[in-house]
Length: 255
Image (cartoon, rainbow, N blue to C red; front, side):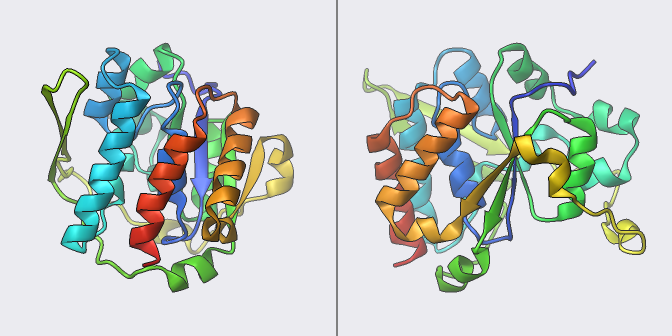
């Protein structure tokens, strides 16, 4: 049975284009957290993905996205979970439990932080009905940030191949693949006639604020990420690692 009382899920609610997945990736640069990619998460659980290799993955992914002029959020998707945020609103508990990926159970057993990105208030409320002990990061000022960033077309690749050299100079390879489920077509229209409202006052001790305006300053971004590490109890914060990733990312997003 899945441990829905788990307290190391971080839900990040933001408007699309507001920089939420960058923040997910930065939190994933802790040894205490996994990237939202099954093979990479498994490598970490097997002791084969230290922070240095996580950074190399993100830098290479950012470079490839820039060269291709196609954005795919570093290949770190919510498909990792096996359950999309909308399913917490529309599906039965039994169906949700059935669809949750095995890697999620393994991350819980290994006490790892995981992230989920959400764009709608209704999905936050529905997820918190299950994952009651989650942390929730609420974005603000996303409209300004996303209006100034590059408008890359967005593609969810079915297969992405990333390579990097390890310290021993051997090549590591990680494959990201997603098989579309064809047995169902999910729709969010079911809740529009009876909207589920998110009441932040019910979760004051679980809420954290992120201002997209901070992204215009590397020092402020790094400083605020460090505060999140401290608040969540994430180990291994490295300002140089976060700064290097930020420089690569912002150079593509706002160039």
